[in-house]
Amino acid sequence: MMPSGDQRWEILEKVGAYAANELENEEAREVERLMFERPDYRRLAESYTRMLVMLNTLGNEPVEVPEDAVGYAVRRAYVSAFMRSAEVLIWDLGRSYLDAFVYYLGLRRESYGGGT
Amino acid sequence: MAIRASRGDVGAFRHLVREHSGLVYRVALRILGIQDAQDASQEAWIRAWRNIENFRGDSAFSTWLYRITVNTCLSVRRKESRRREREYSGDELPFLPEPRGGDADPEAASLGAQRREELLAALDHVRAEHRAALVLRHMEGLSYAEIAQILEVPDGTAKGWVSRGRAAMLVALARDENDHRETTT
Image (spheres, rainbow over the protein chains, first blue to last red):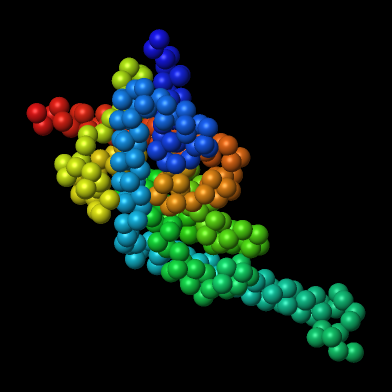
């Protein structure tokens, strides 16, 4: 009997897991039995193995990182750190001026700068 | 270094960028292709800088960075119209032709430019989440526990995504091979 579409997809995935050496003993034996009975499943496993070798080879190929991808991120980090510092500085300056103004207007009794 | 960067040390962050730029660009390149890889890796580093103050060192810095990179790539893909995974009718099994050099030349040493193009084109037909899982497993060589942590899904889901990605990739690759052979004969 021909397997249904879902069963075929299941077999496709199972043979893939076998080729990737990811099946437990019992499941691996089951796939080996299927491959023994059906040469097309054996061919499928060989195709998977070839594809996985190619993926691994591609994954191991050195990749040249464009300088822009690195430099841009670092520049943004510096700009953002500068903006953060500038924001803190402006905020502190503003607060100091406000304190001085409040003291000048005599709205606060204690002396400016922490003196007596 | 990551902890120093998390306290706002830009010099430490610059060091991290230099050290890990290969990882970020490579993953972006494999998941998105060359057109979007550079923008995505820049975006991943910007997100990394914005969020680095939340990095507590509970996981390896590389795992944290993989997560940011993969999430950035997936959000780029989600912006596009949903790509169709190559459908598998199940009528015939997907096979790859034998390499010309026979078993002694299993394409392990190096990939030709054409073969590389075919692989990348086939990867493009795999659904983004499945492709990310496939890349992390079979190109980055990560364990399922690491993949699950990066993709923020249970181990079983990570395994299922890799499995589906692997099958979809073979279907796409076999179909591309057949199409190519039909046009050249």
